[in-house]
Length: 116
Image (cartoon, rainbow, N blue to C red; front, side, top):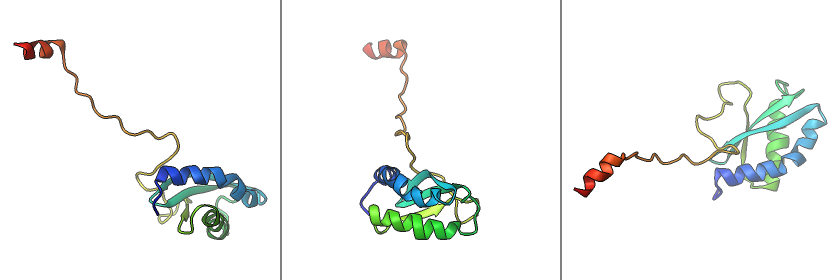
């Protein structure tokens, strides 16, 4: 896929209300946690959190619909507390800013010394 994590996040956020309709009809909701290399990390909440059918809901409802709406190669992971379904150490989430470059502080004395 030639999309940035930021682009994928924005597209998922835009389409999430549509996808969430089915989950909401079962007393649950979808929380978008972040994206990383084409993977979308969500958390099923409400009645869907911890439900035995949550894997089926994630793959057959959420992932299937997002693949139709955004891109056929998207992978959706429900972060449910199991070892195989965890957030990576680094991922994109809304409001994340680029790290600021470290600026070297130069004292007035150092500037004056350069003149001599």
